[in-house]
Every structure is written in structure tokens, then in C-alpha cells.
Amino acid sequence: MNIYELIKKRKSVRNYKPKVVEKKKLERILNSALLAPSAKNKQEWRFVVVSDKEKRKKLSIAAKNQNSLLEAPIVIACCAKTDNYEMTCGQKSYPIDLSIIIDHITLLAVEEGLGTCWIGAFHENEAKKILDIPNNVRIVELLTLGYPSDDSIKEKNRLSFDEVIKYEKWNNN
Ligand SMILES: Cc1cc2nc3c(=O)[nH]c(=O)nc-3n(C[C@H](O)[C@H](O)[C@H](O)COP(=O)(O)O)c2cc1C
Image (cartoon, rainbow, N blue to C red; front, side, top):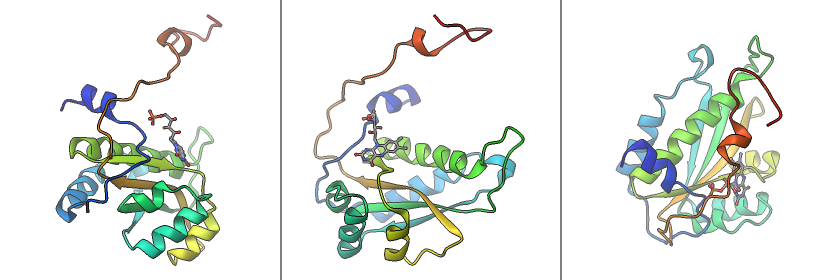
């Protein structure tokens, strides 16, 4: 698939087949994602790949009982081992860097016939306890990964081009 097709096909997958994700596939995805850019090339990202059912059950509770964490054969805790570096623009780099690499993972997953869903609705401290993640590490997102139970392309509900894109200067059009 080319990049345009991948972007169109990616969707949030909340229902998964029980099929196991092949380790080779998972590692191919993660290895490619590691080529993502990061501020100062700090690469603060770290990942905890969770397939253990008991841990996924606990994570789903920490994620406000979202069942997709239990249904997906894999949940990835997308973490930052960070010194809280702040760029000149005033933004912390770690959530941005994590977002880039997570997006790479979501698109690579589509190329491999897999689906994902970003999970931001979770209690970080509870999730950290479940996975023995130390205090100085943040969990930025959880990501579910597996074979989607439904392969159809989902209609996207998005703002129009004109609402979002402005040329040369900000205007209210
Ligand atoms: C940062 C972030 C956090 C999200 N958190 C959740 C979540 O906790 N649970 C969930 O079901 N979907 C979550 N989503 C998925 C969004 O709801 C979804 O991306 C959006 O509705 C657009 O749909 P699409 O991904 O199918 O195109 C999250 C997405 C992002 C980018």
C-alpha cells in the first residue's frame, strides 16, 4: 500500500480477532518505527509490549473499563524516559516525539494487516503499577494492537480543508 492508502485505511480499531500477532510482524513494525524523528534525536521513547491476559485485564480497568484492551492480543505502553526537555518554542519534546513514533506504528500496523487504537483515557499511576514502570518514566499513551474483526474502511468525520488550512497568514475564513 502507498502512504495515501495507508492513511485512508487506518482507523481506530476497538474490536479484535483472538488471533495472535506474529512476533516477526510486531518486531518489523517496531524496528521501522524506531526510525522516527525526535527533537535533538533524543529518542526518549520506550515501549512495554503486553500480551499477558491478566495484565491486559488490569490495564483495561485502569483505562476506565475499555474492553478493547482485553480483546486486543497486544497492548503497548508507549512510554517516555524523559528529562522533560523543553524546546525553544516552549513545548516539551517528549509527548510530540512519542506521538510521531506512535503514528508510525499505527500506519505500519495497517501495512501488516493489523489494527490499532490510541488509548489516552487511562489512569497513568495505576498502569505504571501494573507494569512496574518507575517514577521517572511517563506513560504517554497506551496502544492496542491486533487483527481487526472488521476490515472495512471507515467513513472519516473530519473538518474540511478550508476550515483547517490557511495560506500566508491566519484569517477567519
Ligand atoms: C491522543 C488520542 C487519544 C485517544 N484515546 C482514545 C481512548 O482512550 N479510547 C478510544 O476508544 N479511542 C481513543 N482515541 C481514538 C480517537 O477517538 C479517534 O482517533 C478519533 O475518533 C478519530 O477516529 P479514527 O481514528 O477512526 O480516524 C484516541 C486518539 C488519540 C489520537
